[in-house]
Amino acid sequence: MARSSDFVAAPGLAELTERETEVLRLMARGLSNHEIAAELILGETTIKTHVSRGLTKLDVRDRVQAVITAYEAGLVRPGQSPPPEG
Image (cartoon, rainbow, N blue to C red; front, side, top):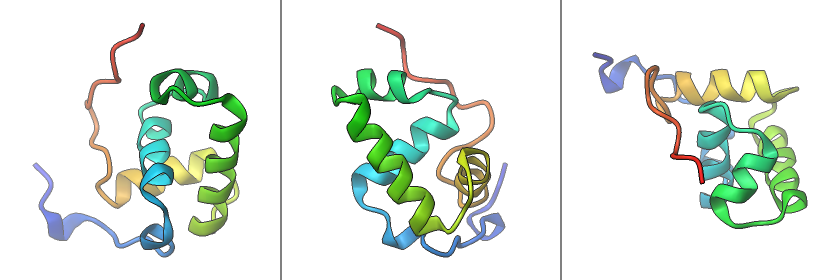
């Protein structure tokens, strides 16, 4: 089990809004923009905006780097189940 001291403080993570952090967690669990929009009951364009702003604040070039950042920061853990579909 990972200890809190094992996690890396990611630059820009504190700058994320609560919604951007929530979107990042769902991205890290493998959800697409469409699936995140359905989960949060938001429009897909709104999710794209949250993703884009999150990538900028984290200073990463793509979703893959953002997901790595989420895991390194302890926002999600390996084996964490995705939200139920439907």
